[in-house]
Length: 30
Image (cartoon, rainbow, N blue to C red; front, side):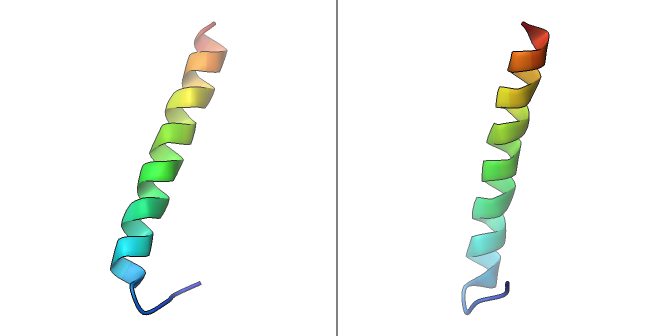
């Protein structure tokens, strides 16, 4: 799971999870 650019990958992973959380939250808000 860890690569040479683990820091950048972790940042991307957090951003993707945050976006998914917003999408899921909006879907349940509807």
